[in-house]
Figure 1 (cartoon, helix red, strand yellow):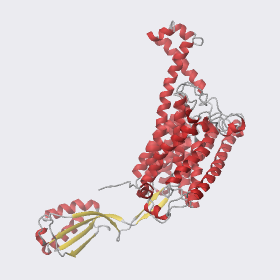
Figure 2 (spheres, helix red, strand yellow; figure 1 turned 90 degrees about the horizontal axis):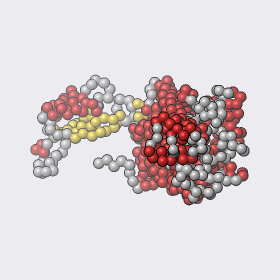
Figure 3 (cartoon, each protein chain N blue to C red; figure 1 turned 135 degrees about the horizontal axis):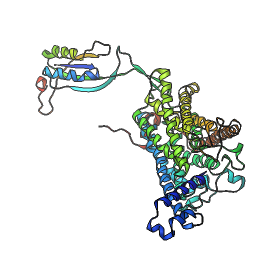
Figure 4 (spheres, rainbow over the protein chains, first blue to last red; figure 1 turned 90 degrees about the vertical axis):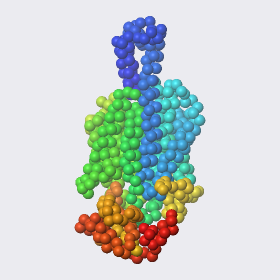
Length: 477
Length: 112
């Protein structure tokens, strides 16, 4: 698909150069503009220039996108989450986000990138990447042998660092489930293990040409469409978060103590930051500054908008007041839902996807959680696990070749072909859920025995800020 | 000497202060407090979880006055803080043993 875009960009540039004339410097390489344009296929110098121009555009957008995705973890998620806890734990949550920016980046550089995107032969190669890129070996400054070879005209380093930002935010999302009671040291080891043994394989399966990659030979049920990480990021972190919440247990005083969010102004601003950062997350997943990126940008925005008003609307109907927490949560739910679909659906279906995300996640957070009584403190599962699943399914409904001709039509456009795609989507969801649950379970059990998951009752009552970090969030004199 | 403790609504604080100042009271202590009396609290909802908030925020004003001035102070607070709705607050009057101005060491009513 990216070939087509690059080619289109190439053609546009050729026309532009032909009509606008050429610079003196350009004339050094190409005898005349007309010749260069008319016969560009055989003129490698012209082609080189055009590639350079394409690279400049792509690289600018991808580096910007990488920064935007980092911005999602902190300040975005750090604000969004920390506003929802009690004031004695505000630093504990911010610390988890900020610390993971450091920790996961180091892991990504050392072995994470290689395990996710490294090549590999045979069955093992379809399960996990090899060590070709470990310690940043073979990751070039130039447009080189990027594992995702469809990314023309983009330096390997840009692709690597963009993907690295996803590696940061995914475990950070899980922190919402065990907020206010997880031991910091255990959280650190958990994130290293989870990133290595859950995230890296999943990223490899979906984006690295492995088990779940659409149209890949040997993919399960034909593979699934996941443009920007609905399964890899949101379903994986969401269901792992649910398991964490259950295994760690409820917070002391759950259902009894006053556990109201201590500062919803943080949460509102954090949600807005996530909304902005998500443009990098989804539109950057086009891997280029092209029309597909524009589509992803627009549908991301539309879905967030629809999600925000859908959740607020549900509150309006059920309790006659729309809340800012509901609006913020709805926007995030819409963003989660559109993530797998953003490179495959058109704007109007995006409104439907956002609406569905807002409504379904509203029920997941308010009714489902209350019914089963688990303490997913900040609704990491209710928003990311549930929203990611809704998004994966709706991608199978609304995907269209009008947006992405290289992939497939969903059930809405082609019932027969779309059903095949839908089976692939459902299988991918099930595989992701089962795999994440099993590996997360093993990691948590081992850590529980080795170092304990939870702080002591005394420390929990005191708050994580003081007991884990020896600091206080608010010193107002 | 008496200490008058008035617990009033936030938006009445400015009125009470101005009225007391007009009556020649030139000192008071104000603090944010929470509590409940006849005024019921309210419920808040966060992502479907309901919390009952029993403690209603109010402002506590503390004024020290001479015995002679007591009635005037109480009347002034009563008049300026009243809306007639439940939740207007309360006034408590205490006997005060002594007061001392730290700067000069003056005591009793001279220190007010």
